[in-house]
Length: 228
Image 1 (tube, rainbow, N blue to C red):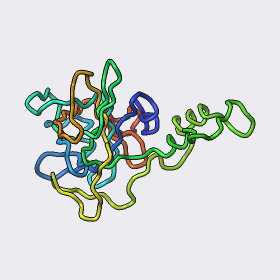
Image 2 (cartoon, rainbow, N blue to C red):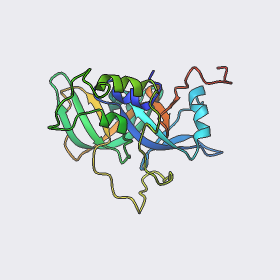
Image 3 (cartoon, helix red, strand yellow):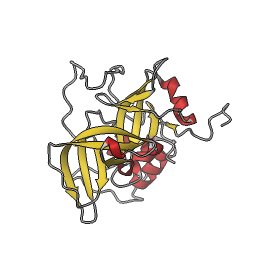
Image 4 (cartoon, one colour):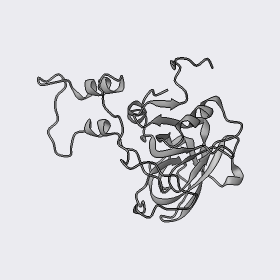
């Protein structure tokens, strides 16, 4: 399992979906993860990993969802552990044996600056590995992934977290129009750009990272003081 958001974003194609979120944990009622305009309700009874998310109430977190963790299907077809979302189709990449559907769910993506800075700019001369003047790209990636480089791993909105009711929109934030979620599907599924589609999220494949990029769900094995 990826120990931090940098490793999670670096491994896998397409890249993992990283979304800004906040835990909504009322004293009474169902716990959920607020994605801005929609919420992921956590199944009850809560698993040990999800129980520990309660202490993140009101804090900014990052939700990680790989493309395989979300499928296009109506709520009536939900399996145990799946919860419903919806998204607007921005565009579809047909890749022969599969298709990648880019969706707008109204969420705010979390950016990994270290990962973006590791990519050469378009038209910039490539640097040969082992050349004088510093480590190559692979060495820098390895250092960052193993935690030897300090500093924040993700860039989130500097404003404090806000918990909105389902369907509500913050008046001081512009509407999100770009895609924030990529879902893998079969090549035969035909979708209309601009159309709304139902989604099912498998919470068994949900990753949660704190605002510094460290994984907090599933719970890391080396957390002191916990015997689970």
